[in-house]
Length: 262
Image 1 (cartoon, one colour):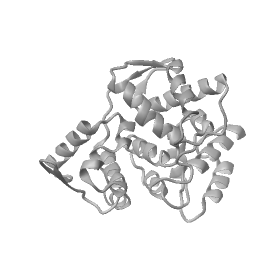
Image 2 (image 1 turned 135 degrees about the horizontal axis):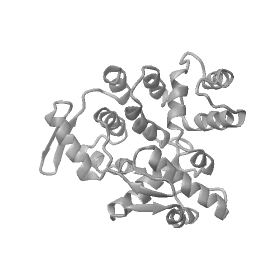
Image 3 (image 1 turned 135 degrees about the vertical axis):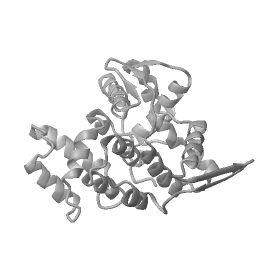
Image 4 (image 1 turned 45 degrees about the horizontal axis):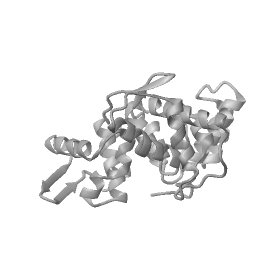
């Protein structure tokens, strides 16, 4: 389910970072009976996340406002934070929701970084990402206003690698290194429900490119499906080229509200 900005390249949000913990804390204090602007204005004055400066808060509010539709598609994230969902389960859900519109993060993780990981790369530096960013300007499937200066390109490259660290895919500071990553079962099940809404065919669902954001190829996804089938958390059966997948709930929202409450 792509939004109006699904193909727009934004350097601002990438440079500001993932903001996982501040966003989680902010959503924990969110009033779902009020509109987004009211919440951002109220939270600015109350400062529950300890922003510490007007400029930092302004950037946090602008980033959250741009990334999330808290009155629609992303309302479930707010509900889960308010219920106290464990941060490590919330984290991959946040990545999924923010990348419905945040093209650059989705494209970088699912195309460039996944390919580096699959090719056996171990350590990646900011300068390694520059050719990928430069190539965006020549692609017809993206919207980008102008060519970045070398300084902006470096900051965006650093921001993308920092996001990979923030979402648990890599570690390190100057040189980022891949680490073993495994989606928590509850997060994987939520993402299955969300992905099935966009791609109901089980075979194509297993091969959906968004799994690559979590460094998972089709074999990894299928392995998790078989494991969760054995645990009785879903039904997944394959006979030749025919696959059947039955999920425990009718939607990601229903799964979140019925099975992700602490």
